[in-house]
Every structure is written in structure tokens, then in C-alpha cells.
Image (cartoon, rainbow, N blue to C red; front, top):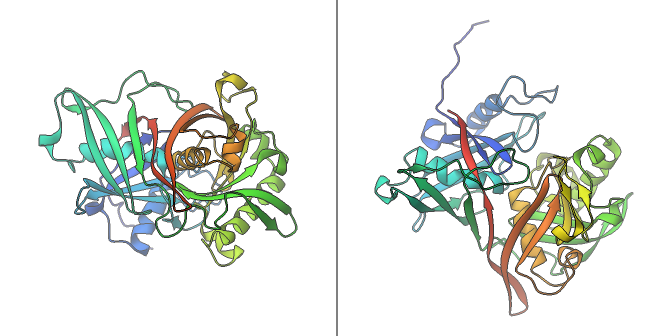
Length: 378
């Protein structure tokens, strides 16, 4: 057996929103294919039968087993191309089927750090607008990156529930976040009856916005909407039930042809459940009162309840909340609204969306939310 030396690859380890990932310049990696995927798996420490990713940079959760590849964009009107890979923890595959909304907040700062943005555009103080082409979803994201003394400002007083320390705010605009390849509601309905053999029939809002998402009523799946990770992630039967519902929802949305395909498509669609406002204690010990929020929302990512809320799922929540009659809209009290504050396991988050109905079809021009980001190591 030969003992070859390790290969050194330039990389930047960043937090974006409530996620962490390893960021690469595309020129430092092989082209798309098995070799590139193998590198990303090894960097994160996957596949790990122990589920811990001890021998890599992953932290054994869907929020931290992520890779980002950036390159200077040749697409008109865009500055940087952003490709996201959700790296499986215990299986040998990288899921390229969707975006990470949280890490989207780190793309602009990292692009500046890597020299992918023209230095002449960086002010001494203020902010720079970075137009991002999200290559997984073929969508535009606009990030407004704060600049101080000619450098990306990372420190600040913006607080984000799910992140321990305050930082600088990075406002994000997700432009036309609905799926261009089909309707925002792939079934044509804002609420469907989703039949899941052996499990039951559920009211569901199936939406393509931000990320394909299946919304359920919390009470229909035996939940209250105030659950924390420990209330669900320790129960294998409950997780298996959610995964079965997710698989059948993916078929109904036209994302896969057979439920068996869902095992190799863990990143999308997401499955979430919502409920009307109620008080609860967040994972940090912070008390959230019913009057602080418009609705409760919980979402699963890669088979586990998320510790906060995925950024793309937050876009889906904001979009669905803006459209009368969806389960999200009804949980928030119904009517017309262009922003909601929802409660998640770590606290609260506000997200806005601009929706309108054209020729009987709902469209969303943009969804808005703020995150923060910083370099952890390079």
C-alpha cells in the first residue's frame, strides 16, 4: 500500500446565517463530476458510518455539512456564480438539487474576499451590491454587503436567533424565487390532499419558492408547532414518518418519479409544519410569546428537525404567507400580508415577499430577509 501525501486546496470556512460551509474558488477544483464530489465528501468527512464527521470539516448536521463553489460570472448583470452542494453525512453523495439560503449571505462577502469582485467597486465605507447567479436553481440573489475601511464588515450589532454572537447585517433579495420551469404551485392548488399509503391523508401546501417545500398543519402530524430538536430527532418512528410523507410529496410535486428516488434527493423538497401563534421557550432559553410572532414553523432538513430555519425554507414561508389560502397564510391568520415573523426552534425570524396574481397564476417578484456572515478560518 502506497502512502501518498495529502493534497492542499485553498478554501475558506464560513458561517452564513445559521449554517456553516467550506467555500472554494472553482478554479481550485476539478470540473463537475465524480472526482470533484469525492474531494468535497473527503473535505467534510463523509461518508461517516458513525455520523460524526470527525475526520473532516463537517459538524454532523445538515446545517454544517455544506460546500460552496464560486466563480466570476460571465452572465450579463451578475458578479459571481454560486453553486451549492449539500454533502450527505453518512452516504457517499453530494446533493446538487437546491440552494442554501443561509450560506447565500456569505457568498457576497466571500466573493469580495476571493477577489471575484472588481476592487474599484468596493467603497471605503458603506455597502456594495453583489448580484449572485444561483447556479443550482438558475435564480438571482442580490446581497448588500457592508464595507468598513475598504474591507467587508463582519462585526456589528445585528442579532440572528440561532447564532450566538451579533454581527453585521447582510440584507438579501431573492429575485423571482418561484420555479421558472413550472408553476409556483405544481398541482395548481394552494392546498392539496396528499395521500400517503400506510400513513394517512394530509392537507398540504406544495410550493416551489426559494426551495421546493411541503407544508403541513402541525396538528395533522401530531405536533404543536412549538417543538425543539430533541422532541423529534430522538424518535426514529416520527422521522421515518416525515420522510415517507416527504417522498410522496416529492412525487406529487413532480420532482421524482418514484418514492425510492427520494433517498438520493435528501436536500429537496423540504418538509415543514405550521401552526397558529403560541408561546414557547426556544432552545437558547429565550421565551417567545404568542404576541411576538405571526405563526409557528418547524422544518426538517436531511431527515432531522432543523435547529432554526433554513434560509430557502424561510423564503418559502414568506412567499406562502403572502398568498391567501395556503396553510402558511391561514396559520398566520389569513388575509393579505407582505411580511411575517415566525417562531422557529431557536427564536424568531422576519421574512417578506411581494406576491401578485397575474392571469390566475400567483407570482412573487422578490423575497427579502437579512442574515449575517463571517469568515471562521482559511
